[in-house]
Length: 135
Image (cartoon, rainbow, N blue to C red):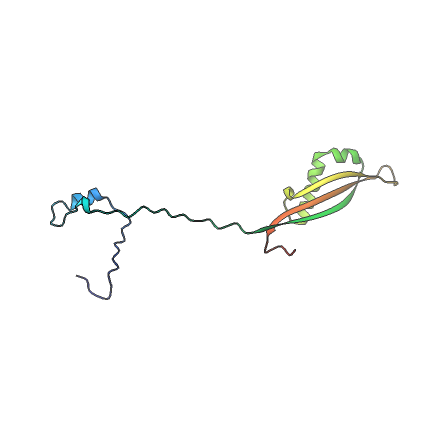
């Protein structure tokens, strides 16, 4: 007997049950479970689609700098010098070093032989959300 304003919804709230257990538990009752009358709903598969990644836009900034060094040829061949310049540009630009490409070249100079220059051509490539890119 139910009293009050609660109305039955027709749903048991049980997501699954063991029919063998139910058959055993109702065996001695007048309303026992008849397995021939049990109907299973078709199995359904729910596919959840992952949200699409936000649209991105590639921003490229190119620049040139000139460095004065004692031995430009050695500097150009030094991998740690290249990594250092790459890291310095990345840090000052607020990007990761992996987003900076650096190319060194010798600068011909008519100035003193001891102080020679290396030209640094660099390109920063950054993926940003399309909404964040101003142009």
